[in-house]
Length: 168
Image (cartoon, rainbow, N blue to C red; front, side):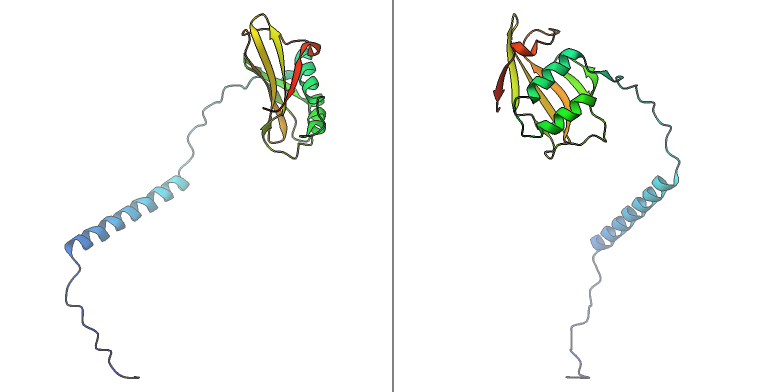
């Protein structure tokens, strides 16, 4: 078999006109992409748009602290021990009608669980109806005290008036 010709048919037809057009457009597209990449990495960045100042952090309001502490005291699992340690150093951020944002320093230990709603929630009957309170945990850290129901702007309840529930 060595030295023998395979007698393959010779290519007698030229690629079609559409094939040439396709190749030309692919080449142009790749060239434009390469120019764009080079331009993106060699130009100076645009002027930074100044960010609005975030809500300044402050110490936790005693009422917020008491409600969060009461929620965390109901069970000892789901990272409650770590969350209680975080509560001591937590700071209060933006407060809205439906939540109080909490911030915990990065050097405080986080829970083994990542992001979840703490399984204990509290309810209280007010003049505006039933209000529930729950804790949002993000990246193993206290993130927010969530409030749902009731009258907008109502004060935090006394923890002794809360009824605690386990589960969703």
